[in-house]
Image (cartoon, rainbow, N blue to C red; front, side):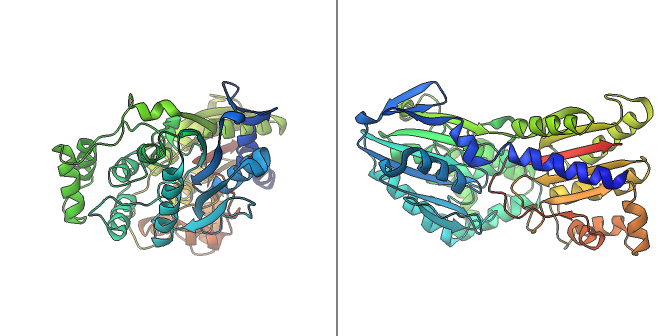
Length: 442
């Protein structure tokens, strides 16, 4: 039974990934009809009214998104620049592909961001910019404001990641220290017309949080960024001049990020082409074909990873004992993005941590399996997308002399599952719609 569960789990996860393949996602929302460019079946742009077409973008899934744009517009594109995570590039015909660091930004990303800013500045009112933004775009568009260095942003990002800050909190700070984020790239592009296509990697699909919303009005404020630093006790643990810049913004000495109602946003249309719920829906369909009673728990699960694991274990127990909320054979899918507070010197990511927290629970639920992956193929600073754990995992671990509790105390989920042979390795998927978790009860 467990071998069948493992085979089915991989098929369901593969279906989740296929549903948010970026190239296909873009083509669902952008196409040519004669000499008109149609966007999401709601906007039609006569290309005879456009002098030049530029393409920009940043993110882990941006290269295949731009490949779709090239397939649609071909030599109508004048030029463009995108920045992707190392190893996530593709050969493109008219668009320059640059690579940078993620999740911590680096100098290569900063140089790429400057070239993207130059394209935005070049465009005028009769030009069209097509932007392809996906998860990871924040780290891949580093352009610090005056007085802040790349090293400052690297230190801040690392501190926020280590303390378990949410992506919304991290991006609020990034936007207020950047020349590209929080609508600032739209400010540079104005008065050009912009089509901004986004692959969502944030809970709730908040457009101003996806890659820190370079073309979207920013809802966050300087005041909120200082509250975030206080919440995680970081005020005295990050560079002093970063805090001073934020305080200057709160005092009105530094301009706020562009807000809703600013005329610059009259020239942009923002479209989400792929999201977590689309991925989960495809997984539910595949699970149904495989004979499971399938349901989606939520695409918006946030908070502590260990707590999310306990919730999934409780649902699996309920299915086994009472047949609720669905009868076995059952498949429960969920998505979103949880957080992990790093407590040791080990290696791992939130998806592997989720699985590690289920090793004991799974052993108490006959014929059960849990799996969790980052849809981008990278879970934390590892080469794994996630991990799988089933009813026999604890017994197998003990046979190898492995104690999951000890590995958890050192935040070392990666090496636990590596020795168990239960890492899920997909390689770069070139998409990113947060995480996908599945629970199977046979």
